[in-house]
Amino acid sequence: MHEADILAAVRKSEFRFLPAIAERYGVTDVALRAAFRRPQRGAEKAISKALRIPLHILWPDRWSPAGDRLVRRGRRARRVA
Image (cartoon, rainbow, N blue to C red):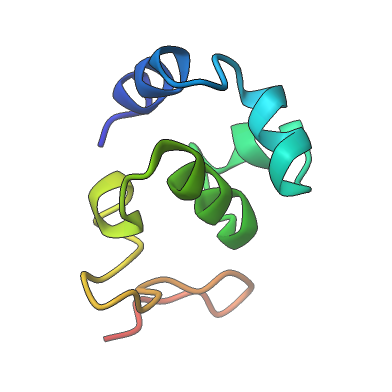
């Protein structure tokens, strides 16, 4: 999904704002915002749980339908298939 679509879903949810999701799921607001730009496993999972939308729908380039991670972070970042 596009960042704007995810943010619209957040606004329509019971949480209304990213800091509310951060507080509920124990991640930082900064990590949640960073998840829109680069992989952030914990933040992505928190957003997914809060919105009740599977990870592979929110970030199809990062997660498989089976729930497997498709990207890695770090110096040797590459797609994992």
